[in-house]
Image (cartoon, rainbow, N blue to C red; front, top):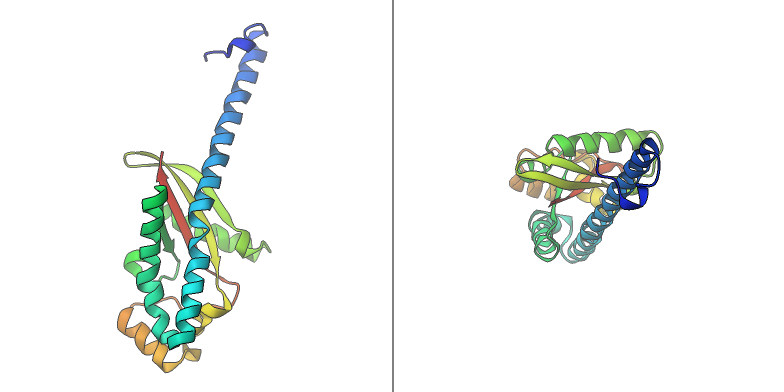
Length: 198
């Protein structure tokens, strides 16, 4: 290990220990910076999506608002990627769109961890996870933030037998393999995931 100049006057074991502590502090500081950056990239999307859904539902009903999640959410995520370099996507253990929202192994583990923590009493809205992960082509920083089911979401994601027939018909038309119903308010519907290559 190359010692920091200021540590050279200390006995070697102590210098090495302090040097390791300094490196650990630097790594932690870098992780904190990446976590803050990931939060800043991911956090605006859910409220923007909720606002767009609220407006569309008020105008045309929940069945007419389904394209907001289907089309507008990916478009919003692309805007974030273009302006920040962070790739965003929404994932779920019970995806509506299996092609876009099925979690990979890291995302699945994060979602399962969120469910365990929520069951143990943690606030679902505060659940998040961020870390450096090895990927093809080199390390990436991955961040996941739990998305609890809002009251507004229940018109399309609540118990299937309680959805309006018009809503069920549109879901069946666009998502024949839909698994994203049966939720209660406050349950974790999925997560927003932000990824950036280091």
